[in-house]
Amino acid sequence: MTIKERYAGVLDYFQHTQPNPTTELQYNNAFEILVAVILSAQCTDKRVNMVTPALFAAYPTPQLMAQASVDDILHYVKSVSYPNSKALHLKQMSQMLVEKFGGEVPDTMEALTQLPGVGRKTANVMLGLVFGKAAIAVDTHVFRVANRLGLANGKTPLEVEKALTRHIPADLRFKAHHWILLHGRYVCKSQRPDCLNCAIKQWCKHYKPEDCQPRG
Image (cartoon, rainbow, N blue to C red; front, top):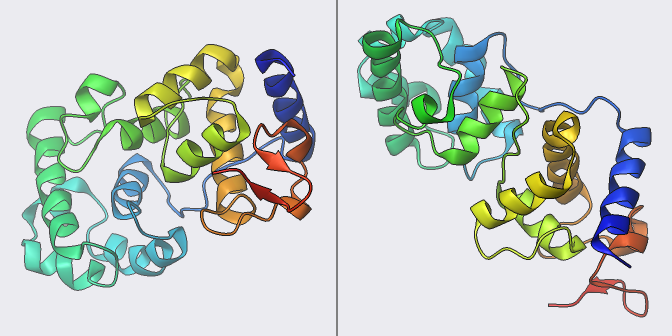
């Protein structure tokens, strides 16, 4: 099977079964989803969605969050992973939004990655989800699944991002981020991938029918 055939099969399947994928994080505007994505690092969306309603009620704007103390913010996010560093990042990020960007979430990779707590993955999520740009965010799920399927052979998230960008049409790139992420979250799991019930295993480079487990 060629790499072109593998991509064609996987993308065609998802286009027909999940034509409009989206994030499972709950938000109402660009600032809220930026906060939620920062909180979601190494944490489940379910947990983030449990803490953000109260957080957003207390600090609905970057101006208000910038004025809060780190301890005030920590009170709302203490149940997520790495709460101390995330509370600090949220305050610093809000301060920079107010002081440097007029309280608005910027729409470029260069500007977004200046914000505390925002790396390339988070920036790509914002570019695709909020600004409709042809971005592919590579989190742990996308990194793992893309390599397992054979869509990429990357040792770093950036290498995987470049491979996916090279082979996926611009209009499908951010949808593909969601497709691969959700497939990794619910089917192609890290420790026990459910290969038997995987609908795209025929295009998977590492699928072994004899034991329904990926190699390596």
